[in-house]
Image (cartoon, rainbow, N blue to C red; front, side, top):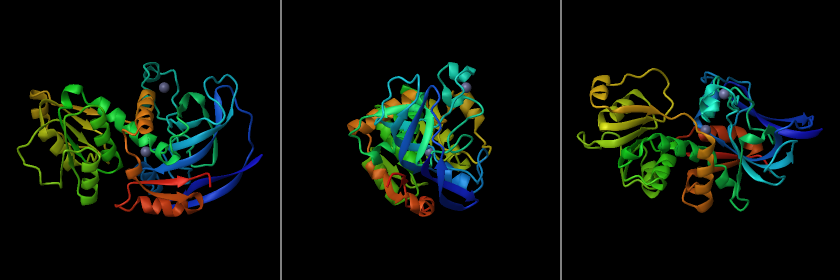
Length: 335
Ligand SMILES: [Zn+2]
Ligand SMILES: [Zn+2]
């Protein structure tokens, strides 16, 4: 038995922390126990907190972005040691459906994702499958490693954009994910990168992190087109702009989470082979790449972490994450 703590969304709009007795059950084959260092707050957590998420409602323990230290290794686990610094992939895939057999664990249905249908990572200690771990260099600062999940989302997103479409890319939206996508495009060899966002501070950051040009919505020349457009907002207006600004034969990637059905200008899409593809979470190789980018400094996470709160201040952390001038808000679970 050990005393642990967890973050709980106890009712719609309400965050609390609780102490509980962890029975410290013996690990099953393939399992490891980890001690959380930081979790990150993302827009989908706020959606759960507001009671608007289709797969998770309060009361629940949130959290799908985590960096942690391995504290115990179960039977039949290879390649993982106590003391390893890790990121845990929150996709608890079944491992045997058609999608899983193809290595596309993000498409396993129903999606058992930590913090939604599966137990959230917002607790000081947890048992997870060893196959979900990605081991990071021990000298990588924890607050940088805490950014691995959003960087991984961006890595996957750019992978969905064919190389031929990376020549001249428009990224609509420069929040956490938009700014991560801009960095991933730069690292993955995109040509010109153009960023559009409402917020002047985020436009400035987009320029610092790799955008060649930045605009407020409505400022871009109406005639300008792009070989690839990444819509990180997925509102009707942004999707329409994406579909009308992409060149014939180009590709639009829907990266934002749409709040409902959207219309697309299908006649011009069909006739001129403008492709519409989507990006939903990631696969394990995306984590490996993102951790390597964080480790060698190609991906700048430090500028994107605007706030760090202690576990006791978790309610303040979720409130801060709802303010438009925050980017990534972290909660420390080890102090
Ligand atoms: Zn997230
Ligand atoms: Zn599956």
